[in-house]
Length: 335
Image (cartoon, rainbow, N blue to C red; front, side, top):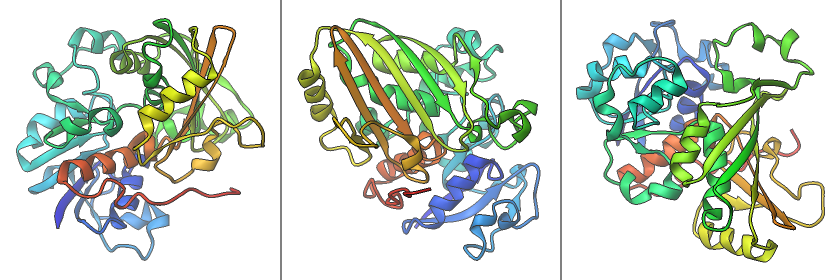
């Protein structure tokens, strides 16, 4: 049995990790760590976990040895924390933004502060099994990309070589993407009914997309009223027709357990919609091509395939377990 610990277990991503890991037959959750709630039962913070566990939160300084440590801590926290706790875990899977970019200058440009542990930046393998499965199988340091970045990467990677290098990404995200400690802009009175463009240019995820697709990505991000879900609409130019684009997606994702091609000619659900993916680890990708324009669309649950689910998928690859283990929930409809 693999011993796992979750650092930052009181947040939304931490709660999703606990939910998924409690249903995983190959792991044992020994530690749920939180700076805010040490000593409290986890189901007082995550009420959906009532009757699932008697586990209580522990303080981060009480971290004991484990096989795998998930760090779901806020941005800028993991990079100061990791050097202190690294020796206690065989493998670290980080869900923050601290180790997604290998270049300290690029990190500072997008995050606004110097990196606290630049010597570690190049040591992390991106947590995208669809692209880095072989590397993840032996990785001791793994960094899961951002939720909008994951959707855009999976939408665009099959198009490399078919489209011009400059792509524009229109990303929409639900309120849970801001985390459990979001500010005034995430209050219901401010969020309800709104479609707020919060990053008109240079969203930090565009650096991740550019790195992992080889394209020059530009991203605009909008907050919408949904709680869960990410949808990206990626605009590119290229001469490939619809058949060539479909063939590229089929060849790229033919054996992938969690990527589905959704590009139908008719029906209500003919293109990816995050509402249908709530709670699931799937990323749906679709496309349209016409007259030199190619539009790629992807949708996912930001807390699962865009975070905790991808991290568990990486755990399965790293520990040699079946990749879909603990991740079989198909989503709900209607919801």
